[in-house]
Length: 95
Image (tube, rainbow, N blue to C red; front, side, top):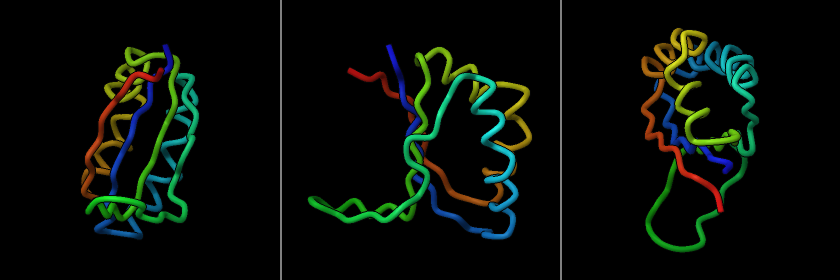
């Protein structure tokens, strides 16, 4: 069953975060993932949620998504993201 990593991102160091943006696609691809949403224009339709940025990455399964997140290939990029942005991150299985 497909699964999605959903990240709410507030960038605190734009210059440093640009390095992260360059590093991460290759690591996602190594684990069979693909970006579904990577930024883009948002419009609130209901509620009070106002994220600064959202990213959605599709993987073949939640297990594969967690393998990517915990991988050696993603380790350096993840540390950079954690230094340059505030992030809420979940994995959720699709329908």
